Length: 371
Image 1 (spheres, one colour):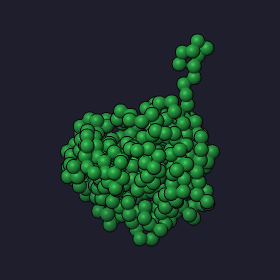
Image 2 (image 1 turned 135 degrees about the horizontal axis):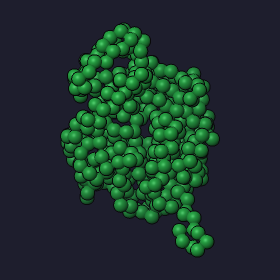
Image 3 (image 1 turned 90 degrees about the vertical axis):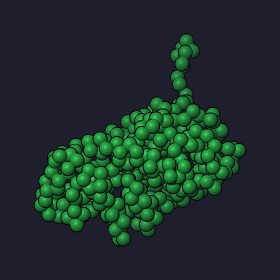
């Protein structure tokens, strides 16, 4: 569910969001800072927020003036949205997190061994890193120290990840606040091999062509022998899927509606949340869950920062997020098309969720021996 392209508002948002925890520009370990690290910025080590006012404004203008109104998923992840998403992952209806965690709890030792040692781990869309801590514990049981690089669009999520991992005293944590893959510059490697993990079925938030481009972009940043671990929610009955995105407590609805709160705050918009409702739709043809905000009345919403007014008909919807559900064949094809070689898979007993470990293959050598 987690979006992966950016969010926080003006440039100063990163410093305000990170510095109060002492993270900006620091590499963290279990006992405190010990070096250069939070590579907070649009390109990993650069200064400045990945979300600027201009980026938010441009995305909103483009999305809300299109024939089918849309907002990119990354706008959902301001501080409030990130906190609400963490709440979603603990809901009884949201099986994805606990199912993937169960796979990691039973298989992290195998996954780390299959990836190859010595190893460092980079995670895209890290969130609070609670699941990944299982992989990190397995890794630290096999080597004396390790480097973990969580990458996320949310300063809040990175703060949570650092707090979660302080207990692992032999682990160094180097958070990166960045868009990925285009604006991602990975730190210099400290181990022979690098494992990039992309969990939580985050890949499902991308259109198929975008997903292929994302994985291909990651592949270009890796070396032969490096590995990639992809977690994906698998195709299943919509009777099981729908409650995960429309829970009885209304947390997902609050998460979705919060994007309008963000637009009111950052762009001076005048969205009345009482005039919109959270709508979930299963698109069988595309094999995806779709999230919308539906206008319950005909209305016009001013957005002063854009010097525009957006008209809504009664029942008109803003598409805020999609979550594709992959077959096992589609999951494998996605990795192969991006240049990876799938090597191993792990599933829960019901085959609801799958983890696939893929490898960057060795470079082919010409007849003359050149690589």
